[in-house]
Image 1 (tube, rainbow, N blue to C red):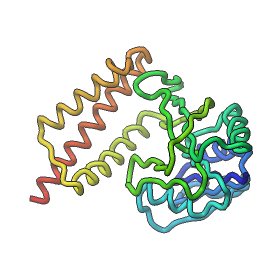
Image 2 (image 1 turned 90 degrees about the vertical axis):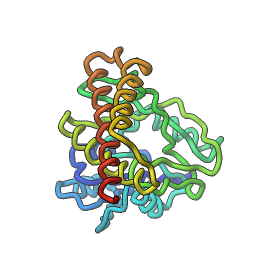
Image 3 (image 1 turned 135 degrees about the vertical axis):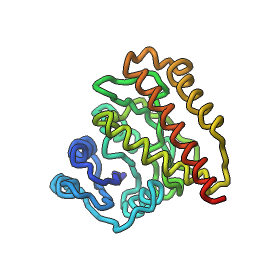
Image 4 (image 1 turned 180 degrees about the horizontal axis):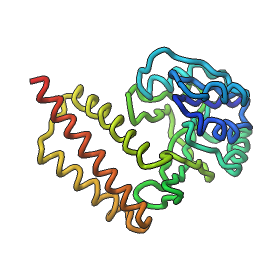
Length: 249
């Protein structure tokens, strides 16, 4: 069973080498870059990946579908550049593909923040559908928060991915700002509306959900920061939606 790994990138020089190394068991690795200004493409090519570049940025879902269309393997494993396949998961994937019991598979993802593995806050086990038979699944055609939609129910693997989403707080803030803008635009396009009270309420509820209900307090100061950042992201998203609605009036 030939396995293709697909990875989309932009300025991921700090991550792409380790990501590709962790997926070295695959038959081909495809890196689709959207205009990196660092050494991302050179590192990927030196690691043996097939590297291509797009001139535009259509959003995460469409870009991942472009990478998917480049895959030639019977099976596809989608990775983000800041993810790593553990040796245990790599061995499990190879065993599974030798005798598949499903057309799609989910796996847990363990994320690291500020040097701490986050076991609460809704971050663990964070099952994501990433492995599937080519032709049986596609990514949602959305700008952010893309996910794989499979034709059949997914089985669950026991191994997990390691995830290093934020190098520092500044990167976290930049991502929240970027994602909240795209999310607000998507909500506005669907005709969703909000108010100042609604934006404040969403932010407060997000903090309570992450820190209390999802027991973020057990993750120490990192748990508090994640809850606060989650609340900020919600506040930004709904306030941007509010301003978009006002502009269009």
